[in-house]
Image (cartoon, rainbow, N blue to C red; front, side, top):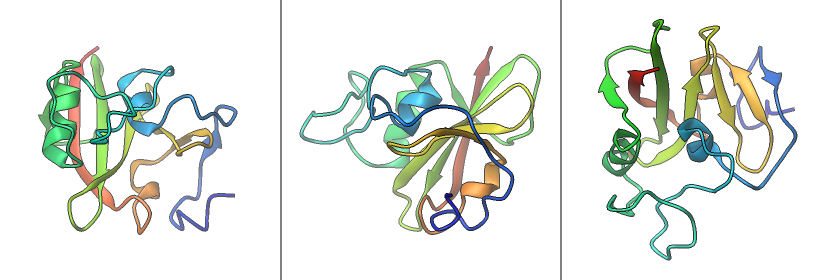
Length: 138
């Protein structure tokens, strides 16, 4: 179903109905009520006092407000929650995913479904590459 956009996506599971209520950034942040994006028109939600820039630094700051900090690996660790920020070759953020207790990752695909997947399966032209991993104590 999603192989056109994600040719590496092999073993995934659809976990929700489609919805426009929230996006991948909100999903990774634990919010299913708002669409998160740092648009300069202020049409979407973005945490207060965080620059409304489509930069990795702005996304890091947004997740730091939630208690996350940059870490050096995506391995599952008991007692920690992890998120991944994907960015394109210009280092512009395109997607975020969060790790789930079985060690796999979950993502909201735009206005479509939430899926469970392996971290690197969404890498490619659509979302770019995993650029940052962040963690916080659960």
